Image 1 (cartoon, rainbow, N blue to C red):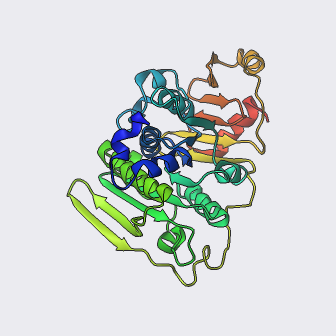
Image 2: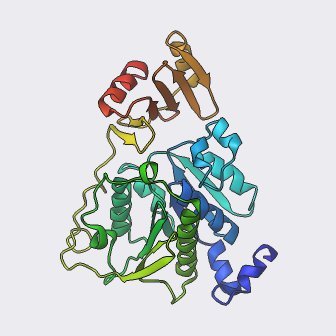
Image 3: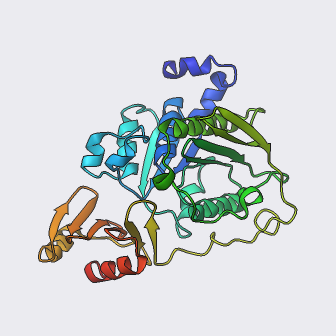
Length: 335
């Protein structure tokens, strides 16, 4: 326990609290700026089991704010979950770290959170966040919302209590679209602060502290303004009152989504597959430049590119048109 001596000395944790942390299980969904910072803090704090979930790979544009990754990871296009697990395993070998390279959807969300005590939200889109909110409500799991854009950050604890508001109580009208990190930018300092607050609240929840915050915290780091807003349960909330599930329990299915600011589309097949990279590489040789990596198989088609994962998921680069991406996927992957 010497590793955690300074944390144990803090009155809010203590020896008993540290033992609770070592026995705790947390899933971090999304390993971009928020998720990688959260995973780093939780691993160092001694949370005994971390499940790290992300669908994407490290790119050079990530390094400005995603503090956990290295140039080497971007050069080799290592999946974020794999890179995070490798790095954190070298930081704290006494805990269990489970990397999951997958797209979070209605077909796998239950398996990702059913055996953990808490979930950290570090997602990058509204649909996945709503799915997470619905799943955590159905399974009575606490989760901690976090978001960052430009110089602004926001976070809130979503607790499985009868009188506690859910995410939809506060953001019922939130839709996709609007400004993104690609258009408005984001400061790495903002994402680090949001992740620090999320992880502090996570420790409070896991050790059973009475000081768990029950407000929505928002701030603008550039102007130095911080604000707390009361979070109130809506009497007619479609989720936590009427229990209407839009995403949870609906299965996965084939789908495609344009990736924010990337000129790329992710295509996911109806069901996970087992791709034989050697066999597929042989088929692709006549189509363009093929590069086999540890976790992906890449095909360069000139203006377009395919990054294929072993489960059949692919990122089609060079287009934001989902119909075109699905057509390319059907032609070259054919699942």
